[in-house]
Every structure is written in structure tokens, then in C-alpha cells.
Length: 595
Image 1: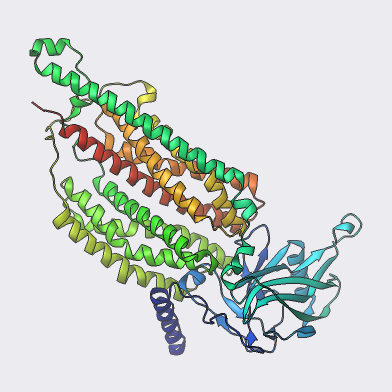
Image 2: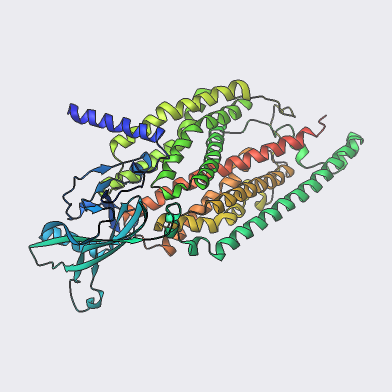
């Protein structure tokens, strides 16, 4: 028992250490081989091809291992969180040494093993492996669809031969192609069956440089299609149009309002009452009133600012470092940068909270540090429980969970607290241009489409319209294992999204204030944040119309992690909308002369 506890502690500390100090390192190999040097084939997972996230350890199926020493392989926390537990296959491959029909191992299957293998073949199970960090995949077997109507049960065959075609340039591997063959039938009536698994290796020279070897795995015809370019261009034009329209409308309208107010200053009270007395100036005594649920709003502002900064940093870092070419590196880097940006969340939240006179800053810090990790814990915990029930490789081991908890306790929370202390003591100033009236001004009745709920519901359409094409490419990449590499497109769309959100929030708030409704704080936040609801609705359409996903595990995984994506969009766009609106409100009211 003590040995097991020590082993868990050692694993936890090792994963934490590797995460913090070896995030962007590649494999432990330098990808340089000498003739005759071992090339390890790491077996990863196996699972149904239509449910790409429903994965299981490769040797959970009745495959056998080679004679080489079997080793488990972890590099980063990202791999552990994505269920990558690479195991040495034991396939004896030596650099530049051809092999023809060599035996890997022999496996004796009983009737239960045969039925398990038949189930895998019938459900189109495929496996993934890595050779020199290059992903390789193949089907477990093949069902005889030609005899679908003639035979019952359906004849099933398992592939027992792996043909590796490895292209090399000098002392480096450039590409690996796998061809499966030698079909062996799996009769359901047999009580025992012996399978002999074999492999062959063919080496081919190539002139392709090592630096560009990953490009042949990228589907340029899909991601760089004319539709993708057209969507980027149309979104950019929409931003130009919307920004110009907002600028013209607001400049002309506010200029007219200022002229009218200045003209009315020379009138008597009786004349002013008979005049056109309405508009955003009338709520100057309430517009800077403390918003309801201040602590929650300030925590969402802190989390949103952190996520905006995190998203921008990760996209730029991925563009610079080509992180998509390394296993789970983007996830590992995201965790690392999320930890570092925790200071921003604490600073933003505490500064906003204190600017409106908030006093319970300790609870504010705890809520800010916990709001996003708490949602990840609840949803991730549910999905992980389902993965454990299905014995999936996606189940996160307890030592890895301890590592994540340690990162939050010893890094995220202290940095959030430090940011809150700085924001509360040096960043918060209550310097609103207008004083707040002791009694709130009554809110006049409005037409139904000018009510805050309708503005919020309609406000998320334009931001969603600017990104829904890119959302399609991102969904297709993540849920079908295409390698997303056009992060330049993503950066441009991200900037467009922020600009559209800021414009929409400002316009919505102006219309609200002009109807003498001072409840702009939550409206400016939720108007843009409602885009997350449209994203989640689109994910439902994508699940039903574009995928063939089935089963409780895949459904839980899909909608659980899509909910986390929607939450991130909710916080990010809510922060952008509210921050832009806050600058706008302060600007227009500081230029108004209040009697």
C-alpha cells in the first residue's frame, strides 16, 4: 500500500514537473537515426471510426505484443488529459533495415475473444499509432458486406499483417504509410483460434525536407477551399460596414443630442418642459449606479478578460511554433498560459468590483478563481465518469487529476489573489463623471422589441454570423480528427469577432439609454455573450446533420465539451461587449454638463 501511494505521488510530481518545465519540447528522441537504430512503434488507442472520441487502449482488444520490452509513454499533461497512453508495440523496426513477413507475435483467442473482435470489426473499429511522432491509423478488420443478405451473422475478417512503407531523407524519417492485409475470418462458432500477426517494412528515399514533412498530413483542399477564403472576406467586409455604420450613426446622433442639450440650457424651465425632453441624458443620475449581482458580473469580467488574452496568446504561439505538429501540445500550452494569465483575471475582477464600492473582496477572489475551473470540473467530471464506466482511454487517471488540482491550488489561485490585491489597492478608482441619485429613476414603458431581453436575444446574431463558417471548420477538425492548421485564419476571425461584438454592444446600449433605461451593465454583457447560445444551437444541428455519432459516451463527450466552448465564448464576448460599452458610456457622459 505504501509503495502504491509513493508511486502515485511520484507520478503526480512528475506530470506536474513535465507540464511546467517541458511544455513545448518534442519527443525524447531528436528524430535523428543511425542505420540499424531502433524505431519505436507506439500503439495508442482503438475505437469506432464514427465516434472518434470513444477510444480504448489498443491492447484492450485481444491483440498480442511483440518481444520487445513493453513501456508506457507519457510526455505532457496534455497527452494524459487527451487519453494518450502510448505503449510500445514490440514491433522490431530498425532504421533502414527492410523486413519481409516477420512475425510480431501469436495470439490464441477463445470464443469470448473472437466475439469481441467480431464486434470491433462490425462497428468499424480503427486504431492509431505513432512512428517517430507521425500519426498512423488503420482499420482492425473488414466485414463482408457482399454477403450482407446471404449470411447471418455477417462474416467478419481481422487484418493480421501490417505493411509499413517508410520514406526517409538522410538520417530522418519523413513519412510513414500503413497498409493492412492478410484477412483471417472470425467464425462465431469456433471455440478457439490462433492468429499470427506479421509485419513488413519497406524503406524509400525521398527529397522532402524534414521541416516540411508534416505538410502532407494537412488537408489543404478542405481548409483552404474558396468557401473558407470567401467567408473570411465577407466577415471582414461586414466588420467594415458595421464599424462605419456605427461610427456614422453615433457621431451624428450624439452630436445632434449635444446640440439640443446645449440649446436647451438657455431656455427657461417652462420652455424646457415644453421642449423635447427625453433621451440618454435624462438617466445621468442612474447610469453609474452599482449593477445588480455585482460580484458575479465582476467575476465574469475577470474570467472573460483572461480568456480573451489566453486565446490570443495561444493562437499567436501556435502560429509561431507550429504546435499543431506535436501531440497535445496546444492543450498543454493552453494550461500553462491559463495559469500565467490568472493574474489578469484577479486584477480585472477586483478592480471592477472595487470601482462600484464592493467590499467582500475575498469572496470575489474565490469566485473569480473558481468560476471557469468549477465549470470544467463539473462537466469534465461527468464526462470522465462516463469514460470510466466505459473503460475508455479517455478516462483521466487519479494522479493526473491531482496534478491539475495542484496547478490550481499552488499557481492559479495565488496568481489570481495577487492580481486582486494589485487591482483593489492600485487600480480601482470611483471617478464617475456623474453622481448617482439616491432614488432610482422610474423606467418608462417601451415597445416589446426594445425590451432588454429582446435586445439580448437579437444581439448575438451578428457576432455568430461573423464566425459560424469558421466554427464549422473547427468542429470538423476536432470531431473528425482533421488537423486544423490555418491559425492565421483563426486569428483574423477572432479579431473580427471582437470588433463586431464591441460595435453591437455599443449600439444596443445606446438605444437602451436613449429610451431612458439605465440597466445597461448586464445588457451590454449579455448582448454579446448570447452568441454562445447560438454556437450551442449550431452544435446541435452539426451533431444531427453532419456526424454519425451514436451512444451515450460520444453524446456526453460532444455536448459536454461543446458546453465548455460555449461558456468560454460567453465570458469572452461578454467582457468585450461590456468593456467597450463602459468606455463609451463614460465618454458621452463626461462631456455632458449636469446641472
